Each structure stands twice: as C-alpha cells, then as structure tokens.
Image (cartoon, rainbow, N blue to C red):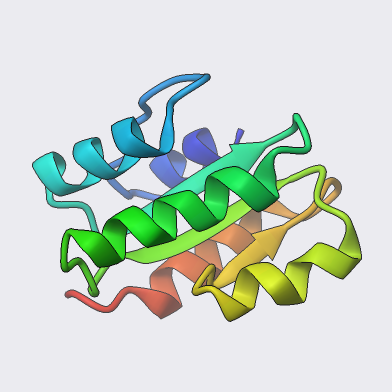
Amino acid sequence: MVARALRDAGMEVIYTGLRQTPEMIVSAAIQEDVDAIGMSCLSGAHMHLFPKVMELLRERGVQDIVVFGGGTIPDEDIPKLKAIGIEAVFTPGANTQDAIVFVRSHLKRK
C-alpha cells in the first residue's frame, strides 16, 4: 500500500516483495543505489529485523540511506527503533500521505 502510494506520488519504487531477510534488503538497497528503505513488519519481529538492517548498513559503510518502517509496532518500541536510526515509524491507520511527505522531506541524497 505504501509502495503504491509512493509510486503514485511520482517516486521510483523498487518493491522486493515479502519475507526478505535483512541481508537481502541491504544488498538490494546498495545494488539499486536507493535513497530510502521502507520496511513493513506485521509479524512482531520488528525489534529483530529493523535493528539488523541498520547494523548491516553500518557494517557496509552506508550512511546516506533514509530508513523508515511500519506495521503492527507497539508504541513502546517506537522510541527504541528511532534510537537505532529508524527515522520514522508508521503504525496501522497511518495516512499514506504522511509517508509521502516524510520521504520527500527526509531524503539525504538529492
């Protein structure tokens, strides 16, 4: 849903599909030279998967990709995710326009 909204807003979106490992996400992001990574997690594994993506980006020396996420994420986990570098977290019911505004205003590479 967010991928479609971003695409409809004129952004190039590379959707890698469901059940991607953190390694697959980081590899695709580097290979495609993306400006942002958006992840969705509905399984409750966000406190494992999102930090692992951030760790792998740091290990690969990547500092210029904006990372955001969403899904069924408890409010108490949001500050923890932001502390590790997830720049925004969108929970169920969030407006896709908010994601569009976020991406447009937070890109580090122009």
